[in-house]
Length: 203
Image (cartoon, rainbow, N blue to C red):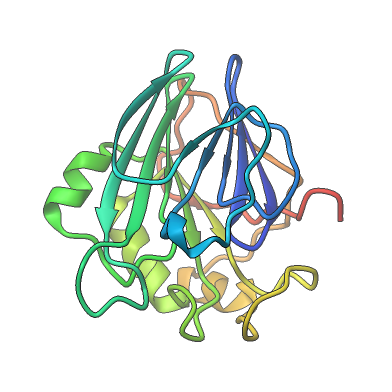
């Protein structure tokens, strides 16, 4: 199963029989689209032919299991308007954190299961988790791989400037070379969490 970075908070998961795009920015091809924020906000493009998932629940599509877990949105004082997704494709569990307000509680962590890959925003500035907040979620979930998203990549447009990914890398104590994609095999798991910085597709 391959993961590519599409910019901002969006990634594409490409499995043997299923393609999923999280929080799409525009046109693209996918079987399923997952939306982390409130669908009524009208911010999300609709991809033709794709099944849209924008609320908590359990969904099975082409042999893949997608579980949406309610969470507090980064701007919420109360309520749970964000959704964290556990996407199990080809035996690999990818968790899309989305714009959560902070650490998850024990029940949320339990619903997400053992995390092979965590896709987590790191840009901060009141829009998402910042480097420190993202690192705290990493420590909670103990994933095999971490893919930081929603930072200043030189291309993505945001309502306000975002921190660069370097602050998150410093927080994690790593300095990996950027890669074009992350290929994950369910039979090969790293013994320690690895941070993978992905270059934006098409850039």
